[in-house]
Image (cartoon, rainbow, N blue to C red; front, side, top):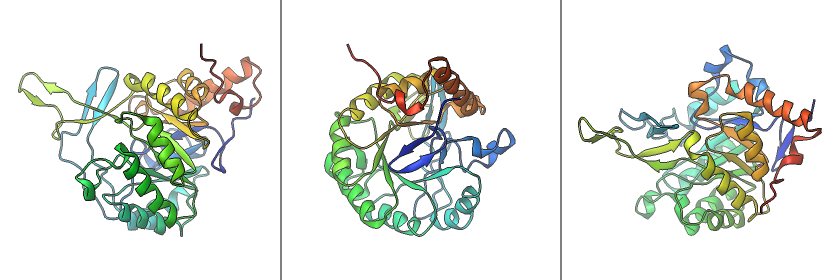
Length: 303
């Protein structure tokens, strides 16, 4: 068997598959299918300083080759996560990445500061959230705002810091380089693309918030393109995500430049997808006499 272990910003993962934030909760529901130790890592449900109820329903809708969601970062808040969710996860034999979010840079920094005192392995900062101090635009849609919130969180924690990028921008590489310069140790991308569906019987949007984040196979080619562009523009490692449902997708994403990858929407239709992807990836490496999975990272040969 090939060596599936990878390192991202010095953090060790037994294999490159990480379950994506928001799609896996805190993992308890999936333990009826397999031990969480089978995974390379878990990126937790996005955690904010205070509890959030999320957006009103309907907030999830199926689309061709994907799904829309406007859940709104529903979570029990930082105190409950530190007291209940995180201690449980830290006993499950896998690498834990704490996904964090906030409405201000100060909120994000405070969450990171509190997590710095825990045993969590890595922090993943979601910069797709609205910045209430700058008119509600997402942190991740401008280089200045992305750098500002990254600097604030970087100053608040010594934990390895991964920043999750929004694809809803003109130039993903400019944002990536701004975040790298601001102190990020790694990047993860892509977050969801903004989309919309309309119920033609009522004439109303299907989601109560009108628009939502598109994920699933429909976004995969966009994710591969952006990962390839970013991996060639920065010096820090990249974790790829967006529409990965099969082991072939995982290989493709790593060839584009991802040191590891996250799986999200696929879990809703097939809870066994992580194990199937890991097994398929291992077979591919063995059949091609590749000893280490890291050897395929960035191996694409552009024309």
